[in-house]
Amino acid sequence: MKSAWNNEPCVVLDACALIAFLNDEPGAEVVASVFETVASVEISVINLLEIAYDALRRTGDTRAAHDVLDAAKHLPLKIHWSIGEEVFQQAARFKADCRIPLADAIALATAGTAGAPLVTSDHHEFDLLQEKTSARFIWIR
Image (tube, rainbow, N blue to C red; front, top):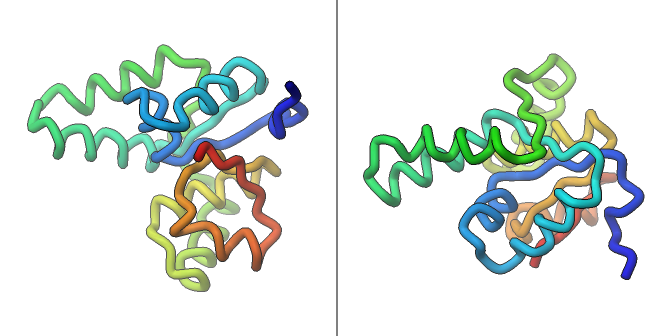
């Protein structure tokens, strides 16, 4: 079966997609398939930080952030350790115009500047954007 992302040279994950994969939640199989079939799977450090924060908050374990980073480094995942001016400008526009959380604006801007779809389950934040913008999404659930 051919998936929507098979012809994509690059995709960008948001935090909820990587959380689903790491915690074997619904949608994890979609993210696993993306890792297996897409040449470049990327994430912003801001979204990775969001995952580390969530793990630390949930568990109270002081090593949680280290564990998240270690897990990410063992995946075929390119981490954008900084944001360039184009991502900065696009994220500011998404945040101002669409009133989405900052980390989601950065994920969407990272995908947009790469010409890539955003892998997510966050319908609450992105359904309206899909209708109003040229942003592309791969929904994991």
